[in-house]
Image (cartoon, rainbow over all chains, first blue to last red; front, side):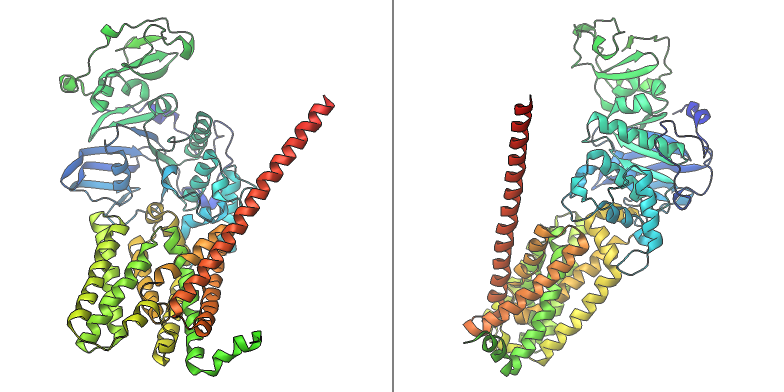
Length: 343
Length: 294
């Protein structure tokens, strides 16, 4: 398996202006300690296997994420995305291989330092009687004194993060009264309060509308630009295709890994999802559509206004992952010009 | 009978003074505990652990050991088994509680049927303020102090684990230990409460205060304080009721709490209705004004 390093050149250095201009620099006390280097691994898995109750979930998984990278993990339900996050956070046992996070070997039952975790919004009881400030303050509980209150310094740090993540004025708001985007921002603030160098997000685009998705993405981009390593799982292929520099396709093992334009090919998607998918290229952008649900005669003009192809149902190439096993390398994107359909 | 007599007469009896102190401590403990029990959706835990007390008491008395030792052993074993079964085998807590504690309760019933004992089964089931002796009082105060220490020192960690156990673990909180301490604390509170509340009614005492507090409080700390106060008030009112109406203390304490819940529920629902009506009225008036202007 190969992976392009094209994103390495565009990797930001600390202090650059955030691309969206939306996020002010993090408080010094909440920033990663060192300027990230892509050669210095934030995440390193070597030949890792794991499963539950005799069922194998991940097989011989090897994956390397350098510090300062922004990576999206995609794959079908049950492909091992959440299990991978559990492995990285010491919440799952592995049968073989090694798992290292931020230079430390991860042992089951011991969460590695420097990792901030953002769960799926659906997993939370939003009627819990808590305010934004209280939830953010919980982020560094493990290092907080054994008294039932938080110190002024801890509160100051939480307020700074709340302010910088665009939640200023909402400190005392009940969490149930927050929008989807505000909830994600609150959880990111909680994760950063721990002085996290690595942010792990489980399905951050799940259950949020398009506007909120964009809001979350901009925020993650800003955090990445400030030097954090970001690894997220998602079902949203077009989200990673459009915005993330690196995508890892997972289905028990890494089926493809690299820049979206190189990785999101019909072959790789067939291997990953076991279903035929079409990949449209438009002005350098990759759009993945379900081949069996495509509006065949209308054409995808409504997406860009530039694509001129009508695709007949008979022309959809059947997907057989076994047959395509000889094409395990990420597709390098041949001469598919703007508006072309690759199948 | 005047109000003063109503309030002071019971204290002519030493047992009532002991019962009142024990009741206040137990009410506070159950009130505080109820917040974690309700928010973790483990309302069954108090019910289950209390049931297992009967098994421990019956077996303990049959073996000739102290009543409390049997109760402690049964609840600790229950709490540990529930904790292990839930965490290690992936069973949901309600199923684990249903299996473990009902089995220990069944052992108690079987033991009482086979071995003749002098246990006042009604007192164990429903509570009895007449039976509160000095030992019961010290047990309640001791457990209350220990529970307060646990709550104060682990407060932030308990809140984190209650709100978001997954992230708490990733963020370095030893959730396994916190869960274990919580289970053992719950067991201790249940054992200390049996004399006053009775096996069958503890479950309500570790649910109602938090249910009332959640209707009004906005923050976790506010919910905790309010639930604790409600627990104490329900105990005090219930103990007076038990004395004057000559009913076991467990039912009167639970009825006091349930009545408070009904009142607060009705009041908050009424206030919410009023707010909605007012908002609709304001909107209608606004629309009328706009149509007049246009």
